[in-house]
Length: 150
Figure 1: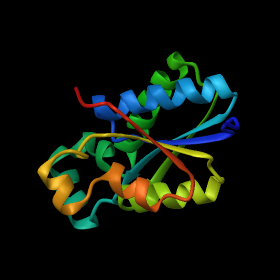
Figure 2: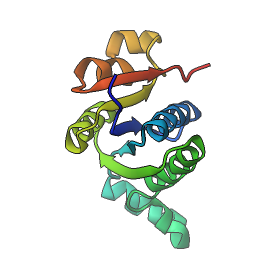
Figure 3: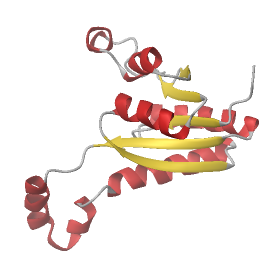
């Protein structure tokens, strides 16, 4: 099997997704590959942001832009570094998780996409689809589904 050069992993900041980040980081570190950590988000509706800003006053800076996404990525980077990744790229991407991850995979020419198995065996996942099953079905590169739900 050839070594992976670019590994993409998605995270939403959950404990489960951070386990997937750690596995992806270990693989990327072992292969001397670039690890691209992605967090998908939807931009806040300006009306909702304005209402929240009025209520929060001087703390309103916390709800503008993609600040929570960047916090999630920073935490994921810390986990990835501890797990052995050497070259890490963080990406905040706008949109639905599966579509955003697959676009990123193509953009960075990834060899491997790593996702956690959360939702894979749930009733909702079987009826409506889940990130791991949709990603595995639609990806243009290898997909590793990490057992993250205990």
